Length: 125
Image 1 (cartoon, rainbow, N blue to C red):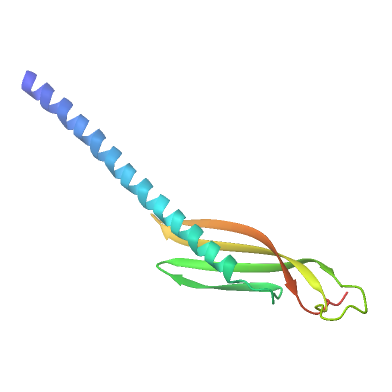
Image 2: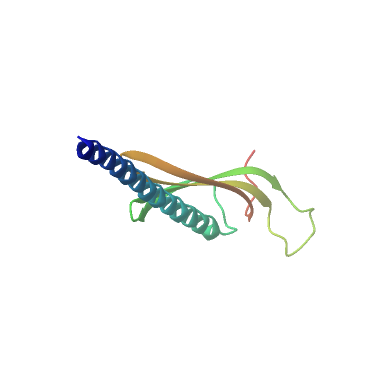
């Protein structure tokens, strides 16, 4: 009888250890995916130049990751007349980058927001 009780306790302990190890592996994989998504989002932010245009762009980033960039003008400034060598205007744009992916049947997403100055003609008012 003691052997059966000891075997049962050992089986329960092994089940708890197995579950803990599986959860640890899943958490490690999720953390790696989030880290990779943040690196991809930073890359998309860095790829935006100064010739920005309002709108949305999206695409497949490979490895199961999908990206979406939204560019929205916030405000514009026109230099005073008579200054040569200046752009027609300077516009502040809000940039929002989203990277999404599927894992364990759930959609996960990382968002990075930034603001950037862009040059170009004054927008129509």
